[in-house]
Image (cartoon, rainbow, N blue to C red; front, side):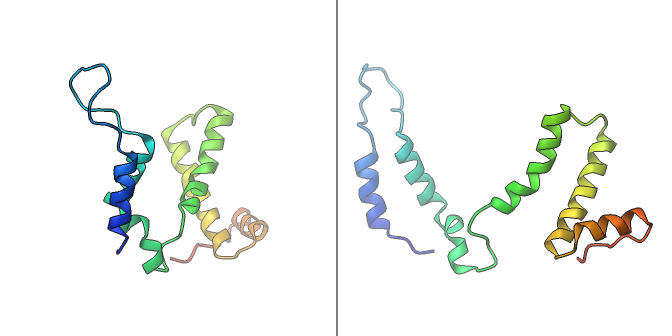
Length: 124
């Protein structure tokens, strides 16, 4: 990826705090949050801007965040899963339902067929 290195260099000079510690002790100075953000952008610019060059990469990670939300809500309500097997089963069922929803299936129909012994399997 190409980004404006000169403007980043100028911003770094503006955001970088003085190198001498005010109390005279040795060691590194604490960097400002803005400087740390700029530094991370510079180090990871290719990954941050990948969505511009590759249309298959989403702009944000909201889809991933939503995928984790339901197990977190379940954990918050009940406090925990009683067994590892119960947590695994919950994740498998939730994953299948979420995939089928994303593929456009009706959740009512999916659940009806699952309980009558004729489940719809998600496409790969």
